[in-house]
Every structure is written in C-alpha cells, then in structure tokens.
Image (tube, rainbow, N blue to C red; front, side, top):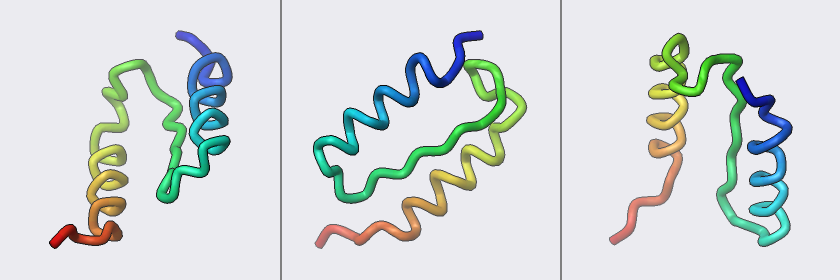
Length: 56
C-alpha cells in the first residue's frame, strides 16, 4: 500500500494552490478499493452533494 502522503497530499496541495472553491478531502484508512469503507465513502459523497448548490 502506498502511503497517502505520496499521492493524496501533493494532489490536495496542488488544488489548494489553485484556490478551488469547494475542495474537500478525506482520508480513509483502507486499501486502494476502500473495500472496508464503502458506506463511509458513499455517505461522504452524498453529504457533499447535498451541500452543493443545484445548477439551474
């Protein structure tokens, strides 16, 4: 397993440098497929979408 510091952290920093308006990042202590965090991932995405403005 590759540590998230090697891939996730640089990506987040790159987005933060561009001032992305609605950036959220989450780290789930899991394997690459997030197989033991599927529900948590789904809830996180649904929560994010529920807080997103709806395009007219």
